[in-house]
Length: 440
Image (cartoon, rainbow, N blue to C red; front, top):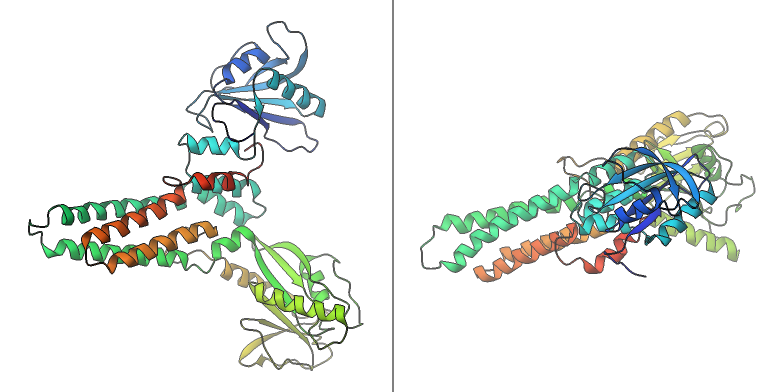
């Protein structure tokens, strides 16, 4: 149907699983009339009251449920519009009947993200905060929850808005140089502009050079487990995740495809990928497994390179964590090519607590907060926008003419404005709000 701001919309904001309560959320200009039709009376604002829900309250022809009703007059509501909530009993027949009554009263089902899109359009939040709401709804770990809460609360928005305000002041000084070229403005004015541009550029560069820590918290950290056949990769996967997911066999080449299992480590979502054993083979299927294993090694945030006792590898993957297994039956070197080796025995349990603690510290390192205290980047869209602003500032520093410098500053402001939604965002809206569930 497409986004229509004048419509009154509704959606089930709670899950579809069996539960005691189901919340139907309604928003739009016709909310008061619809509430009167199904309840007969509008309660005081933001006070929960018990009401009978009818198909048509004026004639009380069909009682649908008895529910808690909350009225949220705009602009002090989630969307900034008039709206209400019906806290129904969660029987499917009740939800279906009340939904039909709302449609008959003039509402329509909401599209994904439409409630939050209206909140953005009505100035209740900006785009970065809206993305934080989407991440908060999808959060599975403590790390994701904390990051999403900070973003929804405006941590990133305040940073970007602060940069925009500083750019605005720079533009004011720049305009003075353009409009009053014969007024003999002191040279300190232009020097001050360039110094502030350099300072802003440095802050933005530090922000985007966070090592993708924020994106790892949001999307999760990926560890690829690699090594030769029979090194114990599948056994390690099962131990790390606490599940017998991978088939363990003494026969070489058992694992042909990559097997991914997610768990939570240090409050962060971590995906371990068990890969095929690395070796030369004439078996077409196993060779494809080796190719895929190398692909996952390149894509992973960190590589766990395993080898069995007495078979130390000649080549070490860059940045790999070296794990020597079967320490109970053979010798494992303390270092290989200057890198420390974690000696374990999956069979006897030796070294496993130390390995777990090491991996936990590695996850914390890969997702550590910025040393500057600035909020972490969470999306490629944010990184691209800030990088565009950095490039504009670099171009501004290279301009001799104040008019050209001013234009680059304006372009930098537009790049930041597109992040928060203050300029040039129409083509972004469908993509961003389409990520939401229906009731948000």
